[in-house]
Image 1 (cartoon, rainbow, N blue to C red):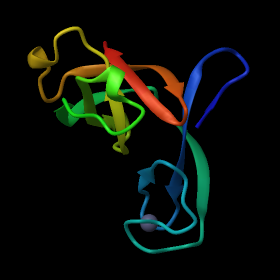
Image 2 (spheres, protein in one colour; image 1 turned 60 degrees about the vertical axis):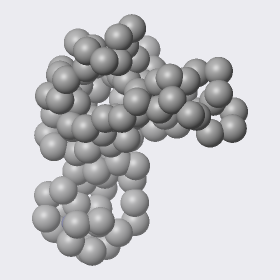
Image 3 (cartoon, rainbow, N blue to C red; image 1 turned 90 degrees about the vertical axis):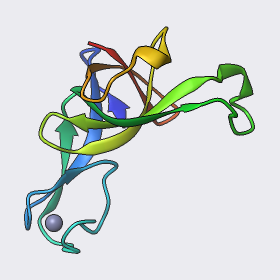
Length: 115
Ligand SMILES: [Zn+2]
């Protein structure tokens, strides 16, 4: 995961030429078809919808000050699903399929805001 030179943020992912799966982070073997050929890097779109989420009340060491926070699975445009943080003032109001926009990548973790 890296920032572009124009200031925009992109999610570094992979696309499998064998089955067409898009996924992140990049991996040497396709997690869907097991193929290891025709795998190439792609920039995944910074927009998607909330596929699933949980509210973390008891955080692991180092993140205690951030709890409660939302950990979600975001389905990006194009179908790739990634685990990410979702920032919202009211986690109880979050709904499946809510539109999200990538706002930051910090320490390899994507942070999305409601779009
Ligand atoms: Zn594949």
